[in-house]
Length: 533
Picture 1 (cartoon, one colour):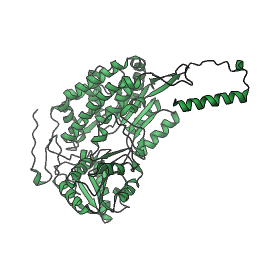
Picture 2 (picture 1 turned 90 degrees about the horizontal axis):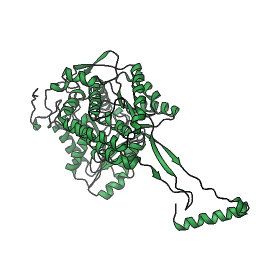
Picture 3 (picture 1 turned 120 degrees about the horizontal axis):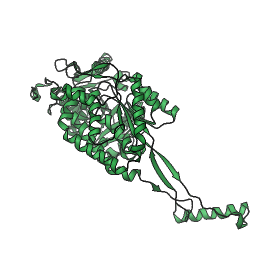
Picture 4 (picture 1 turned 45 degrees about the vertical axis):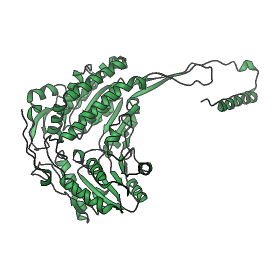
């Protein structure tokens, strides 16, 4: 079905973009995909953020379905763990090709069910291309048995073997249903585990499409099992049965998940909340800094875990930067269709909209000023909120310290880099920050002082997130553990060391304890001087 839309010129401000789901949510296709969900509960509506109206209905999972999912996963686990790593990698490479071949369909699906612009939707597709290729190409080396240094030269070398933990549970959010719905699970699969995936109940069709793609890529039955329903019902059941948990969500819920995993002594990787910031140094190119800041702040309507919500700009350039930032924000194209010219899409639902409105209204009531945006735009879509720039936000405002998770950016002039670093670090979170400046060495030195898991210099989140060899994760209230990189695989393994002893007949030497101690101490000093480990 051909898609029709209408847009205004950039100079006309935010534009109305009509939307419909087209062929991507054709009932027969949805039934085919969702048949892969393990769900025996009543059907629930799937709502299009662009219209606020139901576009399809999908059966929801109940706790008994979680039990069934783990039963299937445990049946499949021994066979998948015994599958050679290169064959597991081949599944990922086939998935890579299938995802890219289905690019248009996947982008339309993400736009229809998650309110994304075409640009934001394609980022998810491209990201899975990166992740699948990375794990497929590195898994054999990362997971291979390793010989380790022996106790003493000439002794047998111990060897270390990594084996899968068993069944990994992934609990993922609605904001990046394709990327986050797959990434941790793919790492667990590559390491030889089977998976029970519990995506957010608002995006079941995306999750079902993921299962269909994995099956088409040749993943054996039972290796990827999806349950999708009430998180309060299903979440504890997943955590209590899994051998490892990957959770992406709020800090409050993450603490509960971590506690349950701690009780069971199973591995947990948690990506939680953030209050990410941009530092703009005095020597920056203002136009470039504005472009990076806007993209990093308003991608996916600010519903990105790595989105910036605070900007600290050097006082020497603050007036010029803030004026340019506000003007550029006002020119951003807002829409609700997969139009490549649209820059900011819709919030997910009324819960997201109410949180954004509450944060902005609270800031204004406390004396903040709106420099751009600040308005709900129901004429564009029921959950659309303009990209918003605020100044003079007091420290007591909700949006000063709590995560807004929407298109709201607060700007603060600061005296120097020291003041900016202190302000950024004065937070309960530490996920992803950005430092912008012409002098790369100076900007990097500032980055090294920030208490966060990831800092990008002279670019937004893409430079760190898309570099899949780089571990990504948060400090403090932003999480525990890392995804991506070699650790993305080893998270989901347990090690076994086998060391073969060599009997030394010390008693036959005739040395008493003091003499034996002196002899061994001399030997250790010799090894120290030799440079051996």
